[in-house]
Length: 148
Image (cartoon, helix red, strand yellow):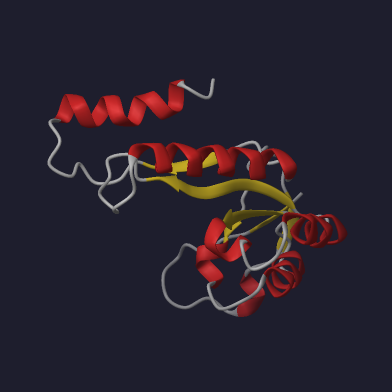
């Protein structure tokens, strides 16, 4: 796995100060598709691998631009793993979804994660939306416990 020496002395570093090196740690770094909103998956994979990254965090709205099979083919051919899928949720209804719709969205994300050999689904809870704190906590805890 590659890692990079990071310039920490202040000022603007010269490009040569970032040199690839082998890491003796188990630190793993992935890039989120939110960092490259204007690129498609193929372009992202090209640039990410060019810079030594071997993992990507997929953002579901961008992932919907192609089929899961197409995405898997691109990922496999680039040798890039999926570190996480972002963001089902909004269980409190703050974005106009019902609780059931939010649950279904989460199940779909879990299914996609399984198809892409992804170990992590990042949930967004949603704003408190006028709920009491204890009720908001229940709304968030239930979808985490139910799929298990």
